[in-house]
Image 1 (cartoon, rainbow, N blue to C red):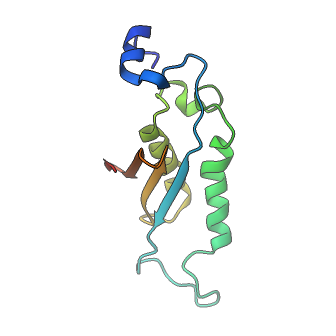
Image 2 (cartoon, helix red, strand yellow):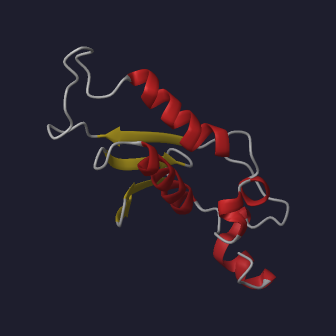
Length: 127
């Protein structure tokens, strides 16, 4: 965190405190709720075309984050600490812009099998 001293960063972030960054292979799971208020298209029989959903995920997640140094390559993280919690918020905010209103229920980001963050908009929990 740019807001903290070197000593404070070391105390707060421990081994994750590295001025040159460190890598993670995040996994994200999304729960998109296609509720009854979303109309089933009578021609396709779908509420949302899965091809469109894949494109939304590509645009909102893969394009800005995949194979990137979050702190250096992603403008959002220039002033936001790149914790798993903030990665979940980033994904939520990007997807919410693309999906039908109310369709996104939660974003679940796995930093490791033991470190998982669930974000549901303003309501978030750690698992």
